Image 1 (spheres, rainbow, N blue to C red):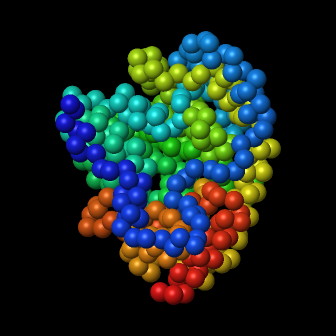
Image 2: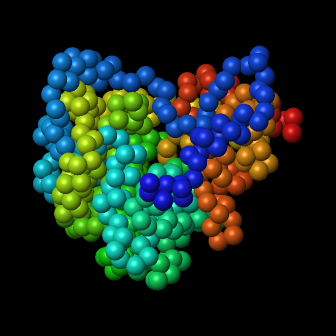
Length: 399
């Protein structure tokens, strides 16, 4: 077997299950889960209808590259959303549909890393989405983590990275809006990273699956493609983005997203995927076309999240060190107990599940930047989120 499998950490939710199994929760209370980033809002009815109407097309093998109509819908959406130069981001060269960003982030890393070069590095923020680490290890690279703390506003301090590290970097993961902090990178920061990628010859993989969950309708988060466009970099060289319908459209089970950017890189990624075997079923592709073509359901989605953030922060804002994020559906409160103990005791007393921040981070430069935090995903209904906040309030008052 691949010996690198033994280097993989247990997934955060396995650790969480073990943490909860060590205590008993009150039988009189129902479970409320704020731990997993799985949207619970109702999926758009018109998307489900499109899916149902085309189930007969499951008799067809899908192509790895996806339907031209889907790639066109994606190219149109991305071009409008990120203000790209007309004709620069094309359905044929710059878009590849994928079965969700999780699978794509992993497989993309296998394509990019050249294990024949000495000591390759994959750099990512810390805390981070666990796929970045596992993908790096199984591709034959070493993960290199950049701590995200209040001092740097939860955005990695890229300027502090030594030149020797950049020279070994083959792939840089960024996540904006960030998981778990919700921090958003600005265009100036993205442009600086593009300059570094040019100087040291590495690829930027921008995980933007939370990009459509923001609070001010007039100020959507910037994206890596947008930074390229402002630089006149219409070939998107060394830049690739990952987007999904899971959060944007409340369709996590559809497993539909796309990778977009540098055509030269996507050509090799497509070659890999023809062997990898993760083509989207045709009904899924047709449903995805409908989803990418509509913004009204996304606006309604953002409205629902705003209501939940306002309600929960109204209850907890004076009791926890917690603030509304720049974007996403997560709260990242600093806890009065270590995050693991806080999560365990909260479950034991109030049957509310949150995720310890330490499970999403690694000890780097003498600290685990998630150790004193928990992640709360406001994905449940408004009523459940309010009830969870009231239980957390009771828990905090009883400490």
